Length: 511
Image (cartoon, rainbow, N blue to C red; front, side):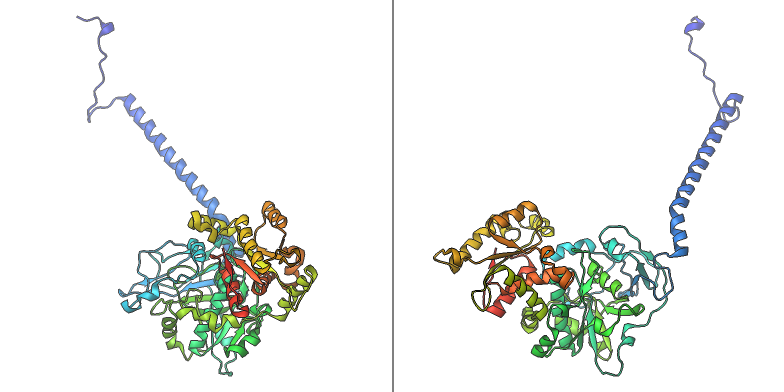
């Protein structure tokens, strides 16, 4: 018989009918601990939720975003009308949701070309992709109002302060227009940077001409590039009176129809074109315009979400009796043979004030040897453009997008040799550089080459001409240069090239 010392311990057996007092106590302690732990976790979660939501709920009681019913509230409301698809379901477009699986309202196979994006600007398409949104998967079947006191900050990722709230109706903008003058208007929402806004204006002129309407031109509006949150009328830089005489087009600007400092918010209905309001949100610039000019906008679908000019015009035909029509985007509208420049763009000459500012600068910098001073202008785009170029133009193609200073200098040397075959020092053309480059080492390279960098802070351009003055002064330099060196992938350079061609019969020297 084995010694008790080495005998295996006898383990207690438990049956459903028998339980020891010790085991019962052990189970009760476990149960109490478990219940206590659950209560503790639940209380903690409720406390965290209360702390997070308290500022939001208390803020709504004071000046919550999008909650005020006052008509002078300082926010812009963007409302999307429901789009009814073939199944009778309503789809909504929201700024906060990624692409939806629901079908966008696009119709008729013979109009499929209208749904292709025109290749107007590769750079712009890439920049705007971060703002693209789609319809949410499930929404209440009512109109959605999205209000924000900081729309522009949200666009740039600086914090999302949007809130959804029902707001009172506002007087439609068309009711503020003179109802007895028999003038019919069309306008559009501005898009992206200043050059894209310029082309949007030209294509808006095409739409207005086709509809027989007067175009209300939105002002140059701050984009995500400059973030100045300011605007200036195009007539500060472009002679619109002369333009109308040359083309017969009818245009007017918002500040002629609306005293923005004195008016309350008005409602504006914009028809969706080029997918802005269906496939993607309206961008930073459009939101800035709406806020600055005190508009709440409703984005309404057309039967076809088109970008071809003739289809857009055809879709607007049912509204031919309306006093006022707005469309959500014109920049992406495709015109036959890019006719907008030949019909309108080349006739938009600079104002005397802008020309005189540049001429005064040249008089101080150069010795006048003839009717006008001769010089070479270079447009060098760096900064925000660099990442785009490096991502899309590797290897030998990089020179067409982001050429080095040395590569540009080689091109300038060729131009100098052409205009001064003898190499006479007195006949060397001065060189002016229009650029957003701000790196000291690069600016020193310009100086070492004998180039004059257009320093707008030193020139006092913005103080004299306003926030968009520097870019327009650069355009004047580029337009009137004896020779222009530009960046092939920059629309800013391409506009300068068109002015060179049509105003002076010269060809740009693209990198």
